[in-house]
Image (cartoon, rainbow, N blue to C red; front, side):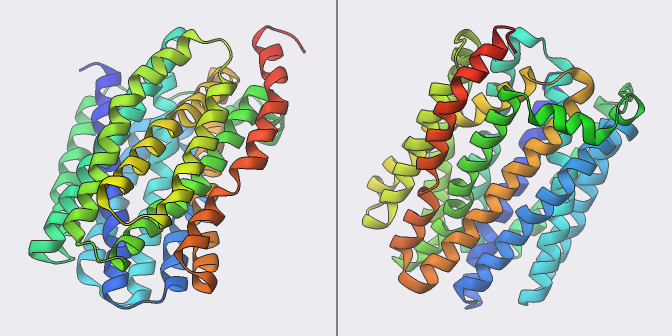
Length: 390
C-alpha cells in the first residue's frame, strides 16, 4: 500500500474518533447539568494539553519513528475511550478527556509531518487538501454516528464503539508501516531552540502559524458550544449530529479543489485573509437564528471559507521549513492550533456565562479583525521570501 494512502486511512480514523468524542462530551456534561463554566474548563483542558505536548512529541516522532509514535497515540486514545465509557462524574470525565489529549498530541504532529515526508513540494497543496478532506470525512461521519448512538443506546455507546476501531487501526498501521525508517532528529544537527527561532523569523512560517491559531480560536469555541446552544434552543442530539455531518461534508467537498488551487496561486495570503474573516462572520451570526436550514447555511459557509486559511497556513509552514525541520515546524503548528482552540472555549464560556450565547459567539469571532490586518502587513514579506529575497 502506498504511504499516502496509509496516512489517509489513519487520519480518517483519528479524526472520526475525535469528532465522536468532541460531540459526546459537551452533550454528556449538559445532561449531567454541569454549569457552562465547567464545560468550558473540560473542553479547554484538551487543546491546552495538546498545545503543551505537541512540540516535544512531534520531535519524538523524529527520534523513535512515526510508526511507534502513532501506535502510542492510538493506545492512549483506546485507554481513554474505555474510561469515558464507564465514568459519569465531572472529575473522571476531565481526567479521561485529558489523557485522550496526550494521545492526540502524539498523533496530530506526527501524521501532519508524514504528509511532507512522502509528498513532492509542487504537490503539497493537493496532498494537504486531500489530508484536510480526510479530516472532514472523519468529522462528517463521527457526529452523525455519535448522535444516533446517544439517542438510541445512551452516552456510553460512542466510546464503546471506539475501542474495536482503535484496536484494528493499531494492527493496520503496524502492518502498513512495517518498513518505515527513522528520520534524523533535528537535535543531532542543530540546537532545537535555534531552529525554532529561525523558523519564527521566516515570514511564511510565522504567517501560517498566525492564521491557523486565529482561525481555531473561532472554531474551537464554536465546536465546543454549538451543541450546547443547539440543545438550549430545543434541538435533539440526532439533529445536532446531522447538522455537523452536513457541515463537514460541505467542507470535505471543498478541501481538495482549494488545495489544488493554492498550488497554482503564488500569493496565498489573500485566500487566508478571506478564510479568517468570512469564517468569523458566519459564526458571529449563529445566535441570531434558530432554524436548522439557516444554521446549516452559516455552518457550511464557515466550513468552506476556513479551508483557505487552514490549508494555506499548512502550505506556508511546509514551504518555509526544510525537511530536517519538519517535525519541529509541524509540532509548533499543532501547538498554536490547539492554543487557539483552547482559547476559544474559554473566551466563549466567560462571555456566555455573563451575557448569554449571543456575546459568546461574537466574542470568539472578534479576533478576525486584528489578525486580518496583521496578515495584510505580512503579505509582502511572504511574497519576497517566496521570490528568494531577504
